[in-house]
Length: 328
Length: 141
Image 1: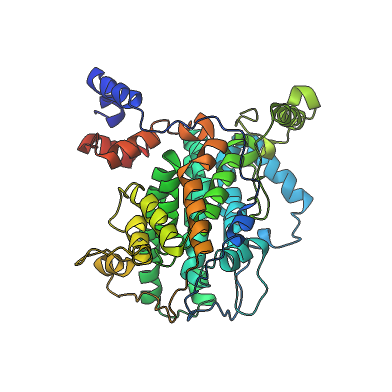
Image 2 (image 1 turned 60 degrees about the horizontal axis):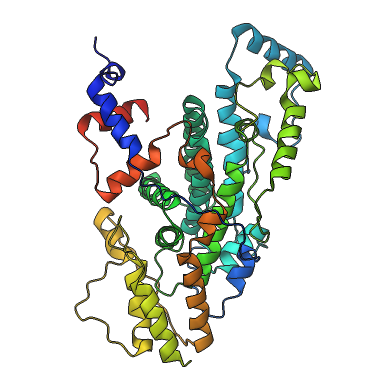
């Protein structure tokens, strides 16, 4: 039987692939060592333009709140696995030689990282806003609606999926899949529990709509990521800013800085650290500066101390084993 | 500099912004439409601009309303100078250049040709054919 991957080994396709790899559409950034010394929220606040925020007719008024991680008892706060269960688990992993990098996708991407994305734009009526939520709803004046929360969460989820693409294919793909699965599962439950959408026909319709929005925004942000800042500003305006007519360009600038900064931090994180769920989004109140070579050397030294068996002398237990690189 | 002159500079800058390649919904057009009257310029007549509600109406059984603004905008000279400063800062690509993610993210290990293929498709320089399309769907890259 002819398999598609075999077809691809043929010389014609090899040439096609080569020519494609040679053409360079990606705009190469020029080296630059100085930057505007204001944080994204300071940039947003420097604007004097008086923007009218559309009246909010759909506040999030929950009957009960969804937990940040999940309903599972294993993810409740303060839950401790009994030590006999832990030992059995480690033994099973060792005996069956389970690939923990694959298993980790669920609890890390599907739970820890999803919670991190969800937290950024979370708001409820008559409750104080978190730091990042304050930036999105007060500093850059986005409307406080469920759809806006979706846009903010999807933006953060896209940033994580850009980093996941740089992991080895079979792991990165799995991480992306788990993150999106969890996103839509949680949205379905949020619509029912927190937005009081009781009809499943209507909530399905919303979810389909959000699905097509997600596809569109991933495409436009990806295009923008590989081209330039104005394309990113346009993509953000179409998606995050709902294509509103009275947009403030200073707010767009603040968002461009925010997104590029987060992606820079993600690019400096090793596969191992990222896959273990150690990434946290940097607050928009903080300015991200480039790492100096000394700082990068220090990071590499610490990674070696933590993960390199030959240096720290600690043999990792089966569930903490990983084949991912900690040096990149 | 008066409001009119400042608005003229802003319109000039906006005119130089490249057009969106993915959609007819255009930041440039919407902002030009907003600032041309301030600069004493006329907006082109019969200008069929796409708005977000038109685009939603095409794919959805329900329609959305654009938020209605209740008051007129009052734009001062200082506001416009601020907008010009921000637009120039975005145009200079300083954030892309300073926060350069490098080849680690731009040629990702899991899928090194990802961005090149995407941009080639968007720029219309190479079309995906049936086989490459099928391959992407089945293998994921």
